[in-house]
Length: 235
Image (cartoon, rainbow, N blue to C red; front, side):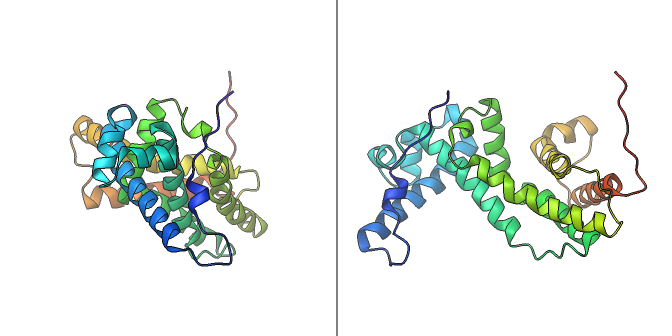
């Protein structure tokens, strides 16, 4: 059984209903500085290449502060992953979506996800690094499971509203559709360098990015269209 991560982070946060004191603000600032530096170092060097020394130097802090607040390098990496997912969810929650305008709302979700991967390369490299580690660090997070619920919930509400109006198929799984959108957005960005060489074109060019975004939107809308039919796979 995976050991759950523990740290001193929560103990330094101010209690609800009162303003943080000087020491608490200083502790929060230190943790935030370490998290920012760790995000950069882990993204640049991967989990194995990053060291506590590199991170503390980038944060202009001390090794002992990392051990004090996060336990060890693994605990810090889990905290970095949690923060990356939290920021993704926070950005997605800020979208102004009207589920009743189902096609447009779905387009906005696709645009957001494709562009988020494009505009946040550190998020992509952190996920790459954790996948190389077979997800063993994020599996120890107490919050990882919480982050998928809001994201899939947004897609679920749009699907239900669209199906109620006869605009979307009622048998489409929000989970499957979310995986489709995430996969198409993430894979393009994660593999853009090798794919550019393989295809002989610059996939980072604005025109190429815009074309792919339109293609993903079209693919998603076709997948949820009542005109599409479920394909039975024959073993």
